[in-house]
Image (cartoon, rainbow over all chains, first blue to last red; front, side):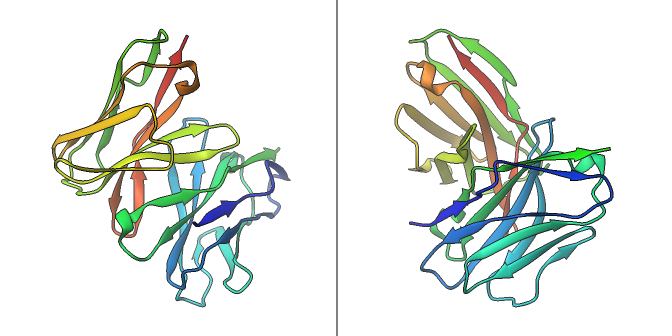
Length: 116
Length: 110
């Protein structure tokens, strides 16, 4: 069975600086998707970024980028120029590319604090 | 937000009472999901549906049942609520390549 591990329960960053959130996963599959979701205090789950495993190029969305290391089964999220609005819980997630109900497996989350 | 609403948004109930949570979507998504979110566990899948009357169990299905009689509605029932079911419950749909989530329901079982 696939698992997703986020080893940092909490992280903090100074406003305008860069922070990297770590995620590792375990799978025997070769084709899959990886995601980072953001959950602000409003509780709404917001998709931040998606990475397809077959793509070697790291995904980027504005200030958010990932470092996808397939062989190491690592998928970290880098937030550049951190803003107060980035303070939230961040979840790393995995989904097999096969149908299998399109079920998504989530890590335990990392709470990010942003200091003014 | 993929047109997903959940009701109620908050509920307090007593141990042993039945509880039904409703997820409603307006965009005709085939796949729908129920998750629970607990500190230290992230989101864990309870049940999911792949069509009307088609459902399957997830990782933490014990004590929960679901029904889907219409495409737009996916119901989660706790037949006899227990304190261990105090949690935040999220409904989600699958669209494109990823899941989109409803606003969540905070359930407290006293």
